Amino acid sequence: MAEIDRAGFEWALRHACLSHYVPDLHADQASWKRQLREAPARVQWDPERDPHHNALPHRSLQLGLAGEAAARYADEWIAGVEDVAPPATEVHALVRAGELECASGLLPVERPYPIGDEVLAHLRP
Image (tube, rainbow, N blue to C red; front, side, top):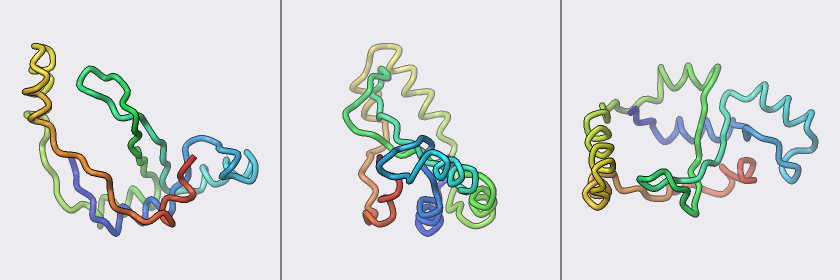
């Protein structure tokens, strides 16, 4: 897993386009398609999942990078890299064994990302 610095993450969000057309956000499908083609980042909102992959009532932002955003990510924005394969393997084994409480205890604490509405307004369906 790579950690991205805040300035880079917010740049990507400001320059992103939703991965799907939303009539209330886009003038028309043609303008959305143009934005999608030109944007260096794409956003989709996916449901969070519990250890059994059941959808939870809140969504998380998924960010895809291309072009300038991908280059800047590789060259400027990476703040750290961590191998999460060992703990992920352990969590998976515990879930398969039915030890959900133990598995949940190994998951990182997740918090809402503090960000102004002006950064996300063009990305909220």
